[in-house]
Image (cartoon, rainbow over the protein chains, first blue to last red):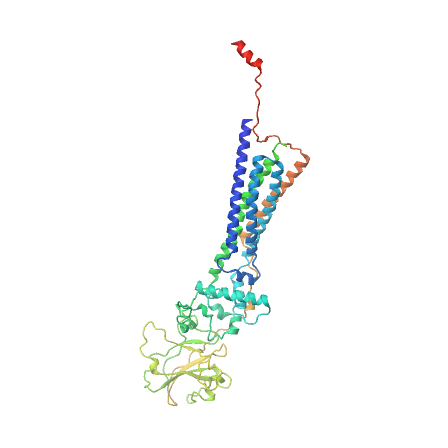
Length: 260
Length: 229
């Protein structure tokens, strides 16, 4: 009797420990997803214009799943300590629902990250940057968002275009319709600026002299934060789900062995 | 007289060497050494067909040489006139000495400025040479350059956006999570079935309230022990 008493306690202890870890990971997931949703790099407008902003949807789901995991872990701890079959059954069912939501979030984040290729941003930049005739309000909103984001990006990260300034030369664009090629081979923000925000040497910038214009592309500055966002949501969620899987299996086994 | 110099594009480190309507030439430094001061050096831009029939004596500023008529009514135009003072010899090392052909957009449509250095109307090809005029008399010229092609922009609608494929990580993540979820659902179903039928009653664990085993200390057990002693 004493021996099986010990093994009960050990098993209970393991389940409680598992639930504590789930609770803490839930809080961490909520915090991480809130961080991503606040868009610290200001790149949301680019995603909104591609109409492919599902990695943000995944982060929103992650916020609520994190809270749910925390609350359910407390329920699980109480249920395991009291060895109450009803409580534990409720815990298992609610946990499975939360599991399904978190699974959706992870898969969405991972899948939609694969859509964010350089060509996608290139086409969107050429199509929308400084577009003058907008069809409706939605179009105008997206165009303004894209233009502002690119201006800020090119200025702050000292880059030009997606792969380089040659993007503006190789393809036609809405920008090219508005600005002549001779005056603006690439947008003004591709020029190296002084403290007042004007180019240090406009002719040098138009000629393309290294040092007076930004010759590298902005794709790294865009994909870096987006990768962190998507992989952070997807793989951290995956890790939590693997751990939760073990804890849930253990809880089911424990439930089946409780004296009725 | 003909000088043995061929105009070339500037060095290739320049990002804007050729754009859709401009190109950048190397300045003709230390080329017009025999020409005296007072001569004006012009740049002649022509379509390749007009090279063989080019007449040096037709002056700049005439309708036949006006930029605004290029390339239809004026198969060649002359621009970027300057004196030799602007091309000092020798060239200081490390300095970028270039001429940007096509940089003046303000006078491109102005008929009163036939020597405008306006943006070129198409992707070319174009051939250029330098011509030194004293008054209206040609005194020196360089060779014609090789044909210069400008860039043509492709329409952006042709950029392929789809078809990036699925990454291995995403496939692994999806399949593993689906399998785990399926196992959990199976476990839940098994649990509910067993709860309903109550086959495996499961009495290995008891409730964890401390089980109190009352010791039956009856009188006669103690009496027996006392009696034996």
